[in-house]
Length: 79
Image (cartoon, rainbow, N blue to C red; front, side, top):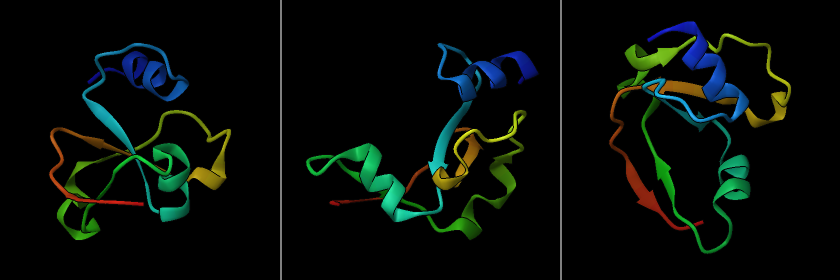
């Protein structure tokens, strides 16, 4: 995983970074999923070894964004 692809991911550009963006706040998950969407819940203890440090200072700290590498399996829930 290289820094350029991580930066591209964080900026919202197409990338093959190997990470996905998550949030620790359900309110933010709802904002991004919309009322008809699905929120995937993950126990933080099961992904602690997959957290990737965000290479950029957050422009949106209220999002509480967490980058996770690899395939993440969680429990789908409705907003």
